[in-house]
Length: 266
Ligand code: NAP
Image (tube, rainbow, N blue to C red):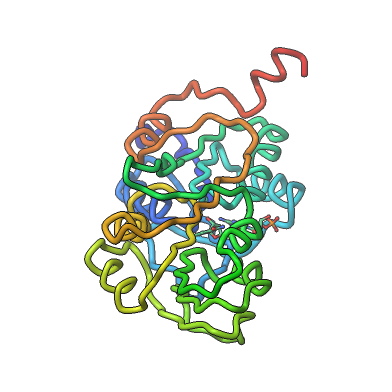
């Protein structure tokens, strides 16, 4: 995309994932594209990227519409985590309102193999209940913001892995915290689960490779997994690789978000 004389298209990447960072690294090497990466600001020190970035919420759908207009954004790539459903829904609505194309960069969900023992649930509260009444040793691979759902089951011994060191008390009385940032590997996660004596793993179905090691380790150790299904996100075009995003950016004819609905008169 982009001869040196044509105006450089402005791309907003909604980030917070390894994939968003990889896309930013590729776009940083493309002089024909002017891209900005947006972080929610949940982690204390996001890794540096070779393109400009901004931090913090936009202020709902209206705030995002204002931002897209003020920054003259031509296209949006939603590379947020599959569980960041609110941000993704806002992107669908705002891009439709401003009539600019939107593409999601989404990892395929993980699927249980033949030997896996998964219980699939829709919410973290259901995941907490699926642990049962008897005390167990539980690995929670779900992120700091969602730990409160497990406060209703304080009898378990939890192992929690977080990106940033703790600044507040956790709502769990029996908890060990490990501070580490992915991507994680199978040998490391297997050793972690063995050392803790983990009996059951709780995970969100993030998909992708950066966080899959705990699922593979659970498989090797024949541990049951409580897997939280992904939240529903309004329909939007989506791809699963940075290369496919680059191909989409190279074509000038991507339909504006909501264009199909407009054609159908809805
Ligand atoms: P969420 O519930 O969908 O979003 C809540 C609000 O946070 C959004 O309405 C928006 O605020 C703001 N926000 C979210 N992502 C943003 C972004 N990339 N740039 C600017 N503002 C953003 O999202 P979440 O689950 O809290 O996740 C927050 C961030 O952490 C996301 O960037 C996501 O990719 C990353 N992350 C999430 C998970 C997870 O399991 N949820 C895991 C790993 C990484 P306004 O309404 O004010 O615009």
